[in-house]
Length: 181
Image 1 (cartoon, rainbow, N blue to C red):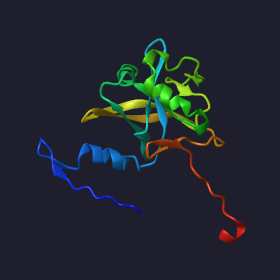
Image 2: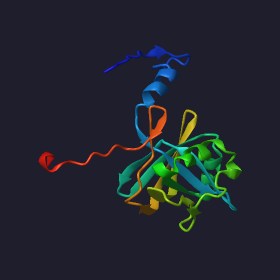
Image 3: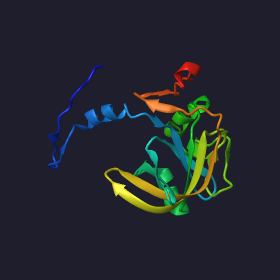
């Protein structure tokens, strides 16, 4: 096993942290689902790719999504008070780049989605939730958007897209043999 140690350094503001480059390198080793966070802009759906999405609690069901402070999607979430999260399946991995790179007004062009619960959810997603925003927390250059889940759906047969070590992959599920049980 190759291991690298990075020591904290005192930054300009006096905070003892590892350098940002080292932090980014380490974070690539945190495997995560690739999601698209969505909202309505009043007339059409908007959305962006995100990997910093997680459940906070199940009482009440609450989700957190971290978005860049200057995100157009965040502006529309603030206006609508609702947001959707779709977990991308491996077979639709091209949508990850689409929702990260295309101009915001073209991201949904030709993309299957529904909007029946107040925020867009992508067709074919592994899972989808719609949340009502309960709070925003500004941290650094991001905003944590917290919301109560008001709709949830899953596709039990879909295989999730995973982001790990700066690449897109899928889980390697190994089935147990009878002797392993």
